Length: 329
Image (cartoon, rainbow, N blue to C red):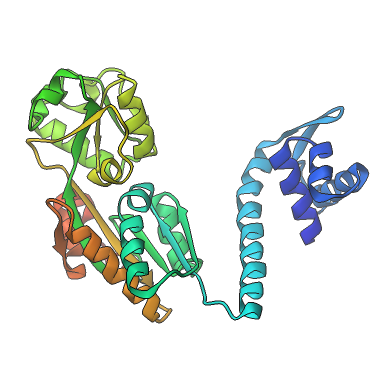
């Protein structure tokens, strides 16, 4: 499996045609076709179905592309870093965070950091909580910020924060007239919430169930994987979004009202680094800047990393109870 083959495959996936990939790579169309065919022959299955000059990715092609895109991105970073070393540039801060933390906390922390130490190269990627954890464990990033759980072996949890969730709704919605939105009022409303059933969504469902409004009674629920999406859906009048508070503060949308709920639905998050890698002074400074930025937010509560298991127990109940050594920090 050669790099040129992977580049040809990725280019066809990105452009949607062999002709477009050939232009992108500055190669001839027959050369790109040959490289893709050689890759298919080596791996033993078709990456595309052909319809004359048009191609459609196969299911296997989509699956492979995720890994190829990551690998090519990593190689690009190596090229960039090699050039930076040749120029004598400082090593960039490479970070991964969930969208809420990337939008609602990291910009403020990086602003504090640059005010203290000056501008530095930064690479910030937004990803799902599971992808953030994987990036930290694999050493692909120096620091991750994500919602709990963060109990995987190989992670150093530096601090844990908690903030109450909020209701986000159009400013002319009748509920926006309330200083605090009653949870009971949401039972009759269409809700917009996160699709991941094991994190914030689980806490919302459990809270509604305890209040006598199980989620199964919610009609036409809207689920999404992004708080920014949820805000846009709420602004369009499609429902009331119940979200973590960071996105609404970091990326507020005009026309929306943000209100606290009368029932606490905790959003719990933490900052982690790879256990096997020493924490450099710039990373340590960012860890502290993140805590300072979070501490300045209303209703922020800091927890010691040792409280991780207890917090999981409070959020998930019996399902969070450790089994053997598998949940060691």
